[in-house]
Length: 635
Image (cartoon, helix red, strand yellow):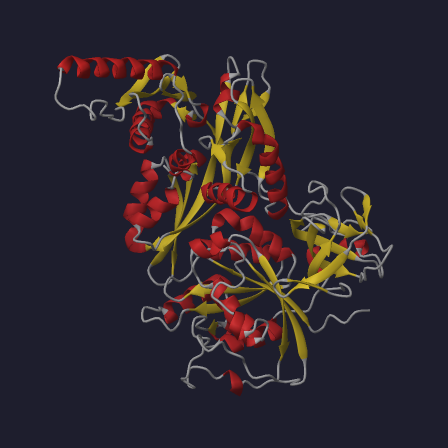
């Protein structure tokens, strides 16, 4: 049997901007995983969009080898000279000749990517709970901790950014103690930026996080008899992520729970969900680039190149092995939007791109839709507005697909004239129901963490967003946790941005489904140049129609490029117009080349221009740039 006692599988969980990626950088340096000449900040953030925005979007696994008797290795640009700050060399280490395999999975911090976190947690035995000393415990700190507890992980509390002048070390320590019911001495104090204290984190990973086990999946995957599902000596691995390779097919990112697999000609594995046999062409580990190995063994985290070219066959949460060891709970999309190819005959390219993207983003939902009037499109579901925005950008960058996005909406439950309940995600589907008997919308339970002094401003913001306060709790250090119910349609329209504004950046947010409530809905249609633009149509409560109609028209007036003819922008219900503005035509000086002479010549040119503009206004197509759709979504 493969010895797993010197393997540690762990992840870093934290609120956004608390320093996960920076801590991961220091761990890579200390273990010598990445040579100094190749090291750069946010090393595990593989996508350009992650580095540009400064946030982690995708989980990223990496295998590190740590020799406990080795002195730490630093990249010179991050090392510090103050020996009083960095005492890693003086650590008392037992078993000084021991070598450990440390499998780290770096995870996102934004709530839109919580599903990435939950999948990573199931592949590991422990988690570093990172808290920013300047901000203290935040909403996602609590949410991620609850996930870690649910998955029965060993939690190592670490306080980061202790080197900053505004660090609240004692207050933050008290908050962590209250949250974990732990001893204050269990909290490690570090500066991921300078490297101070990071060596202690490596030692704590070895001392406090247990080696790999199979039974941890019990309860999490809903398999109470999970030990019985471990087939003696058989290879069993859970797929926690995947991506597509043109040459090697689907690459399945796996955590091995039992057995070993050494690929060779004729060697096969079983994909349980699809009940098919696969013949992998390669297995390997993450360094963090893919590195082929002779095999994968019990307790390891690695990848399997399946050689499957159909991306819809391999599913995250499936088992590769003899018997299923369970699966993940599928996330429910919160926001839906129709996605049209910018060029109508590129629908297949769009669909293929979304199917491949789902391999790497299992939280993405999709279905095909279309009409004779607007052509074929993909109806896609997202976990939030940032998730939607990132997905559209990834389609453009990674697959070269330019798209037009309809205005996002939430999923409503409608009881139709026959009494049947139907899910409605777009204005067209709603209008197709002749006499809806009842319409219900989702309300979410939000949890807000901020300063006590922000309570009044938060309550006022919740009132504007139809929120109902459920309870408030106090935290150490003059901080509060406020719980409230609010409609999802109000939550997705930049509530988080407004919360940050009214709390001067101190407020943080997490949320989960609460209940369904009755709502009186209708469709707000938008017309540009007398032509209905379905991408801008919205489902709204009747009480908001006039205000939203004015806002929509004004926003389009600001961002639409001017045409060669005057452009009327309108919003309303059916034939009833609620708001209207006319965008002036571009001025063109048709008489610029004339000088002196008879004025009648100028009059003829002006008349001809006027007639031409009338023809354009009647028959001309309005070109709406891709950027306009994205700006309307952000609006």
